[in-house]
Length: 112
Length: 115
Image (cartoon, rainbow over the protein chains, first blue to last red):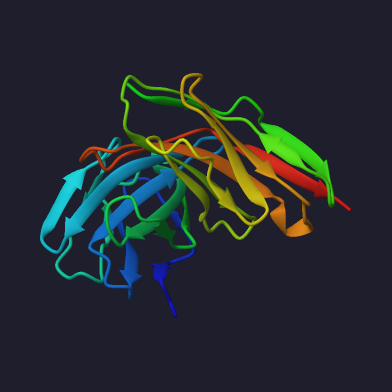
């Protein structure tokens, strides 16, 4: 059972470059989330989706975009990467409201 | 706005002993959920235990149990018979019972288990 798969595991970007963090799930969960985890901090919600075609902003959406064309995939797009976006990014899914979150293994992104 | 505070950045425990991790939160809501998540060195976040605020009984999952004090807004995690595999960052999190999908996270407690 793959669960939640994030790619890549690591990435180094130069300032101003763009990239897409991939998140795929095989659990048929409607709810999907993108979080970032900065050193010594808890998680901050970037964007979330309650189903295919529906996305909404979280706490820290600036500098990011998402799409949800299928139930399985929820990519996170960084345009014009900035050093402030250096972080570990987690994708998570949820079967129904307040059921446990299932997390991917994270993507460590460094912007220099 | 709700906040979650974990006052112990680091804790340590001897293998087979018991340790308690503290979490306090601030909210004006009466209905909500509280969670403890574990993040081992592998980085993946794993749910340890969950508590619904309307339930007076403290949640228990095997060696993990909570002491939920609603009036004091306290939600501590007790790990009994600690094992080496319990070494991890532990995060306390809060979520409203309404339609708000946001989890409010504490800063975490790093737990070391000494053999």
